[in-house]
Length: 110
Image 1 (tube, rainbow, N blue to C red):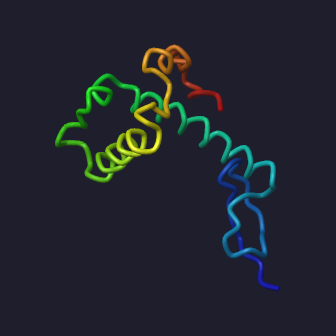
Image 2: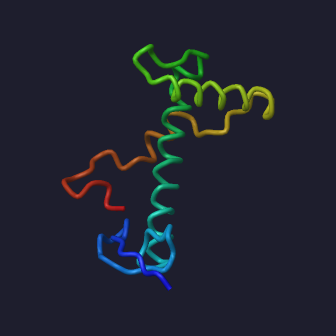
């Protein structure tokens, strides 16, 4: 059985795995990593999609990468078509209020 040397994406510790795609030294670290991504992703989604610019049907500037503009447009279209125009995100000010905006040198501590 082949063993692969890896570094855990969560804790940075070296470990060996028999899985070619192994990225974490434990199930707990895999879950912690993915939960943090999910939390941060939903926060970012609410901020971007709830921003008044998008609520008015406007997209990002021409400086914004095309894939980001296409994804935002697709989300707006899906809400309009599949949710009768009901947004699938928090209101912008509600999203801002929910964020811990004063991060220290430790990042967001997640």
